[in-house]
Length: 190
Image (cartoon, rainbow, N blue to C red; front, side, top):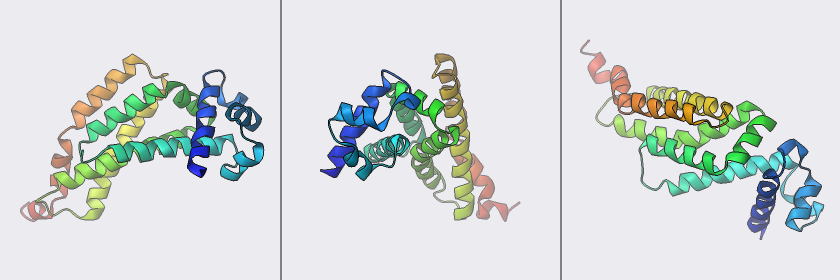
């Protein structure tokens, strides 16, 4: 019951976001749209921003669960782009209503599992420390997050979407090359 109530409240916030910006939406608006009382809202969430954060976390969990056995980070990037386009109003309102750091944090959470899986796969047969693998994964995650954040800043413009395609092309396959620089087996031969 609690999860269905949370999802109903989330849907109400989404409905309201098609009509106005997040800063113009109150708890009263959400509970009236949802048909529950304020006490029910506050049982689950502290405020409208807490509900918004839960929506993003739920999206992350769903995307990670839908990932299946796919270890290709570009699939993760494509999934994020598709979800952002599908939730355009929510993403843009969140970006302009909450801190940009919060939106970047959500993007990193979405993308990082894909990138970590690729780094692990690409390091097969190499003697690379976990700290170095973590560094490579973080490098790719932060770069990708930066490009996605810039795309949101541009109001999800087609022009900036081209840059995301270029990023995928530039980074695809380069994890192995970078990991090779940290490979203890080859560094002993240098």
